[in-house]
Length: 140
Image 1 (tube, one colour):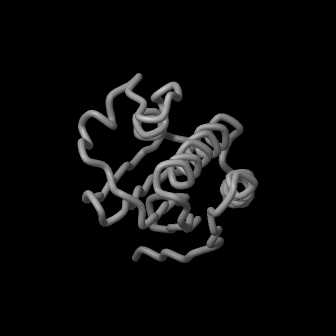
Image 2 (cartoon, one colour):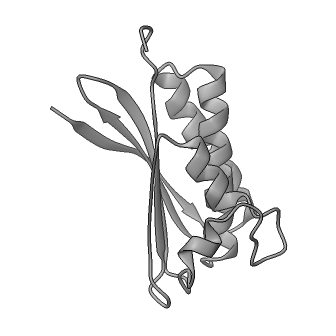
């Protein structure tokens, strides 16, 4: 049986909101016992995706969700914007590609860090990015 609940919904409208997303993600990760390394991966991805939501999507919202199954606990981050969308997803997911002069590690870096990654976008219709980070069992 899977249980998913939204723990935090964080609006992303200005630069300081990126910090709020990071804090919310860290708070949930700590509450479910993520290791420092797991927390760092989660918070890094949260920061990159929140920045993309603000910079490329014109702002939006981040949901920090907690998913519990018999096998694991996961922190899921859902970033939604109603911006211009991503024209070339494959290019956008290429390490080093940046449409805004950055390092080009936002989407591709978040995908590498996360246990699950999903991106839905269409030109003119906004973007939704979902990443999930699962707890590691002591035996796994």
